[in-house]
Image 1 (cartoon, rainbow, N blue to C red):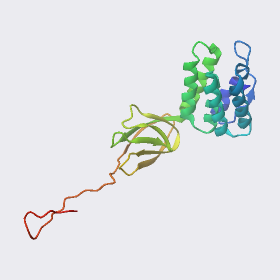
Image 2: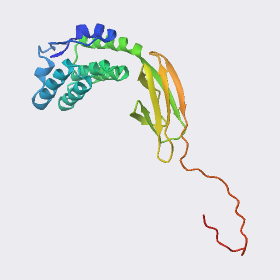
Image 3: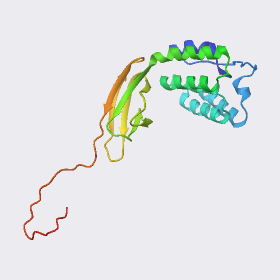
Image 4: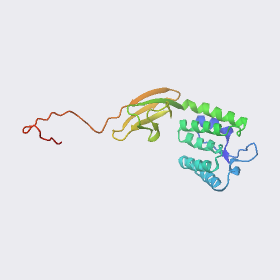
Length: 215
């Protein structure tokens, strides 16, 4: 079984749940038939979870099936799970990953359809340039670590409300909640404040000039 590609584009754009259907590869085998052992067991578990609407759990099992098999076509189902969780940026990245890893293995029709799906989902993806005052700080989007400051490039996020934060030992966490629109680009700055506070203090000593002052 595999999510039916001919329905995927319409359903992805409409936010509906994709159906499960048998899809044939060029060798007339389903993805499941090309899996074996634990990978197939994880696949079956993922399909069962998906049909019950347990998309996060289904994603985890599809990922496990991919890690065991390294079959790039499994990533298609991982991406659909991400789409259903409204993680559109992650879904786009997974579809592109399938294209990269499946180069020379996917049919022309499959490549064309994935590109069409990506084009549809890109409308719900925005880019954010994040500037952090402290290099070496960990940067998070909605609680998930995405890199270390300074970031090499703008980050891609799904449209909607996003919480972007930065953390570094010795500093208070800095965070900002922003609302982003698909296709737009925005920029924000995060300033981390040191937990340690220092200041100059004048000390007047009465007594011997060689007295030792301790704080």
